Length: 524
Image (cartoon, rainbow, N blue to C red):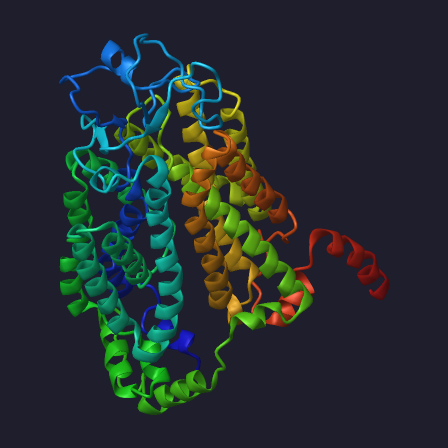
C-alpha cells in the first residue's frame, strides 16, 4: 500500500484538510504584505537640502529657494545640491551631474547638502529614507534593503526545506512564526541602518518557512489599506508583524505531517493522526482498516525512497532542457513582477491609490489565466502574459510624463500581465516535471525566481545612468522569458508524467516532436 492510498482511505481532501488550510491561511496574507512592504517602508518623499535661515512654509516656486537651489535639466529644483553662494537671479539653471562647477565661465558653484534634508511629510510621517537620510548619494542603501530581504528569503527557503525533512513541518512552522515575530519587532525597534538591514534580512529568512504560493489578492489589497492608515514606518512594520502572535497559537490545532511521521518511524502518532482525519472527513475506519502492519509497510516504503536532488533535474537531455528553460522563465517572471510592483512613482496617483489598483487588477488577471490555460494552453499563456508585460513596459517608455492617465493605465496593465505570468508559472512548471521530481523542480525554479526578485530593486538604480533603463531592463528580461517559454512542451490535455522516462518520451521540445513523428509513423 502506498501513502496516497492511505489518504484515499481516510477521505482524501475533505473537511479535515479544509480546517488545516483555514488555520494556515494567515501566512498567505502576511507574505505579500511583507514582500511588498518596501513600497511604503522605503518610500522617498519629496526633499531638498536643509538650509540655515530658510523661511517656514516654503513652496517649490518660492524665490528664496530658487536663489539657493539649482535646477535640474527637467526644470525642477535639485533635491541633492545647493548653491554655495546664494544667487541674485532666481532662475539660475543647474547644468547636471555630468559637469563640474567651474566648467563654464560664470557658472555658480554647487555642493552636496551639508546639513541633511527637509522632507515633505504630507504623505508619509516617517520612512527609513527619512529616518537615516537614504537619499541622493545614499539612495542605493535604500534599495538594498529589499535585496537583503529577498536574499534572506532565498537562503531561508533552502534551510527550511532541509530542516523540515529532519525535524518535521510543524516544528519548523513554529520556528518561522516565532522568528518572523521576534525579528519583525527587532526591525521596528532598529536604532541604525545596519541593525535594520540585518534584522530585515533575517526576517526574510524566517518568512521563507511559510509555504510560498502565488500572491493572494487579500494581502496585496490589505497592504494598501494598512499603509494608508499607518504613515510611520515603525508602526507599519509592527502592524504587519503582530499577526504572527495568533498564528503561533493556531499551531496547537495544526497536526504534524503523517507522511513525515511515517518516514521517522513514528507509526503510532501517524495512526492517531489518520484516524482523526478519517473521523472528521466522515469516513470512519476501524482498526483493521488502518492496521499497524499496513502502516509499517508504508513507513518502510517511505524510508527507502531516495530523496531526489537538484542534480537529478539535469541528468537527462529533455529534463535538462525543461529545467534550464523554467529557470529563465521564473527569473523573468519574478524580476518583472517585483520591478513593476515596487515602482509606484510617477503614475499620477498617490502611492496608496496605485497599490490599491495593483491589488485589484490581480483578480481579473487570475480569471484571465483560468480561461487562457483551458483554451490557449499553458505554453502560449505563459509566453503571452510575459509578452504583455514586456509590451506594457515598452510602450510606457514612449508616453510622456504629462499624460499621467496613460502612464497609470499602462502600469496597471503591466502589473496585471505580470501577475498572470506568476500564476501560470506555478501551474505550468508543476505539470512539466514528473511526480518523482515535481517538488524538487518547483524548489529549484522558485529558488531562481527569488534570485530574480532580489535583483529587481537594484535594477531600479539604473535610472542614474538613464532614466528609462530600469523599465527597459524589466521589459527586456520579460521578453527573453516569453521567448524561452515557447521552447517548453505544451501540457494541456496531456497526462502528467510519473517518471523521468515519461518526460523523455513525451516532453520533447515542439520541433523535436515534429521530427520524431515521421519516425514513429515508420515504426508503426
